[in-house]
Length: 144
Image (cartoon, rainbow, N blue to C red; front, side, top):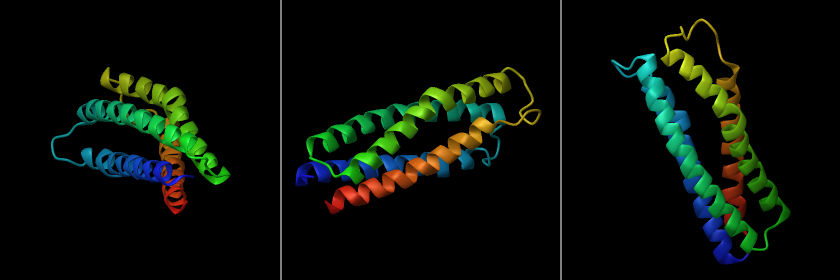
């Protein structure tokens, strides 16, 4: 990759990674432990925060794709970019709608303990894959 494309791709990738780590692995679990935060309030906040995060992630993904495409990337950079973008797309198109259905039910009065959601576990697993791919992509891009 050329120097400018590699620097942009690396910087934006690490920005994206930092946002995912801060929201998904720090803010999301902590909000439910705060005094006075009920499950419906936590879900409402979470939906708003993740909607904003996913919009920013989409914009950052577009910038990363453009930087990678402009820089004569190695196969490794292309593969890692593809993994991160495909995982994000899967989260947005498949998992988030299921999570929204479940949170709609809970907000409408359904007991959250009554039925467990595998969609949440799937989202977390995909977040881990995305985090690892972004970490590797940032390192590889900056090493180019």
